[in-house]
Amino acid sequence: MQYKTIALELLKDRRELYDPLRQARLLVPAMETLASELKASHQRWIHHLTPAGTQGLSMSPEQLSSQAMELALNQLQDRLRSWPAPGEPLSPEQAMAFLTFPTSNA
Image (cartoon, rainbow, N blue to C red):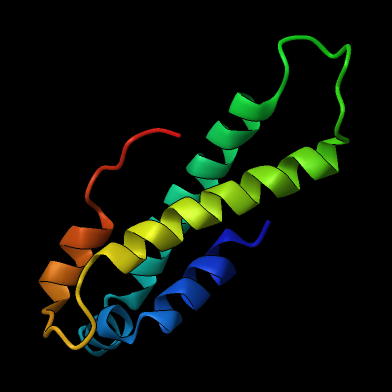
């Protein structure tokens, strides 16, 4: 998985986060923070979706990973959409604080 690439694209989609982070030269740490969160969430979802035993596994490992990634991405996108409101001015410090705010487990 290219977690960093996905994280960067998610930030680019949220210009109110992306622009202040880029201007303050905090884009790379923010992207790395999101990539780590996405990876951890993806792994939690894989664990959550994996049956206790290998018998009765209805999905291939690739399908399981894909479904887990979709759930992890949806979760992260929902969080990114939750704040700030579009057009709301945002300082780089506020953006980093939002991105590093601890989240709940899957």
